[in-house]
Every structure is written in C-alpha cells, then in structure tokens.
Length: 218
Ligand SMILES: N[C@@H](CCC(=O)N[C@@H](CS)C(=O)NCC(=O)O)C(=O)O
Image: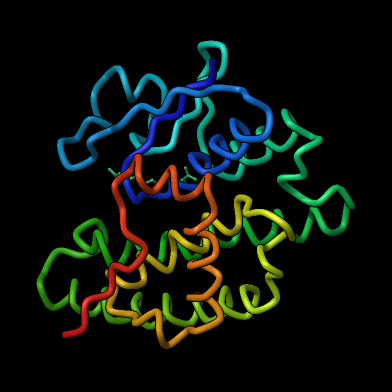
C-alpha cells in the first residue's frame, strides 16, 4: 500500500486528493500519515532520511520515498493511466505539466515569502517589505489561476477534479490567509466551491479538518 505524509491545508493536499480519487475509482487503498509541521515532525532524523528538505509531501511506494508534488502527480498519473488524471494528448499534457510546475515553483514559493517571512529577512522592516512585495505578486499569480479557472467546465480537465483543481483550491485558501478576499476572484472561487463539494475532495477536507474559506474581513 502506498503511504502519503501530509500536513493539514499544506500543498500535500494535492496528492492527498489524487490518492482519494484513485481509491474511489480503482479501490486501491492508501495510508495517510499526519505530519505535525508546527511541532517540527518534518525535521526529525527519520523524516529527513525520506526527504532531506524536511517538507511534506512524501509518497512512499514499496518502501521507497518520492518527493516533489510535480513528480508525485506524474507518477500517480502514469501508475493509473486509465483514470486520465492528466490529459493523454502530448501537447495538452505538456501544458498541464507547465501549469502544475508553475503553481509549484512560482506561486507556492511566493506564498512562502508571505507566510514564513522569517526565512527571507531578519529585521521587522525587511520582513514587512518582503511580505508586502510577495503579497502583491501572489495576488497577480492568483489572477492568472483565475483566468484558467474561468475555463474549467466543470473542472480543470472536465468531469471530475484532478491535481490542478486541488492545487488551485489550496492556493486560494492560502490567499485568504494573505488577505485576499476570494469574492474578488468570483470564477476562481466558484471553481473551488465545486471542487470542495466533490466527494473525494470533501473526504480529504474532512480528514485534514480544513475549511474552504480562510479569509476573515478586517
Ligand atoms: N516543491 C515542494 C514544496 C514542498 C513544501 O514547500 N512543503 C511545505 C508545506 S506546503 C512544508 O512542508 N513546509 C514545512 C517547513 O517549511 O518546515 C514539493 O512540491 O513538494
């Protein structure tokens, strides 16, 4: 059985949702292991032996760890080719990978600068500056995701959610924590509501005990 190391509301939500979809559509079970990031469980010697970066997610397959969401998604798609987690057409698949990689290597680290600013600056002034610039960039990135979300019918790749829907939902949830009102991105918000209401995603949100809307009006 494959095992996923995840933290609630973190980017590990993406493979967590994918594994739940796989379970629903093939019956293949998986184990979900909670990592308490706030307690530093991702920095223990045992965890670092799986992922030297000390980050979630890790997918363990036959005792071997696989890190990086883009690689995990690619693996799950190839492991279950009939499910169509990614498009089959080579060009459509390449575009999908490009979008996924951008969410992972551009949007995601921008949010890290908003949320974990202490990793990037020391003084209060410097932290405030890093946070301000990153929050503005994050908003611009979400506007691009919102354009894509506007063509989701009803989901990114059609009839049921996949990786991109789960990542988009995660990024908008984080946006709420960065002070971005989801009502300011209506088509994007509507996509995340459809995604959250789908059974596999609802099951994962319940397991992770997370809510869709993290935005609190000042
Ligand atoms: N590019 C990495 C990003 C992983 C990542 O940033 N994980 C965050 C949660 S979203 C984490 O584990 N943070 C814990 C920490 O920084 O100690 C991937 O795709 O796996």
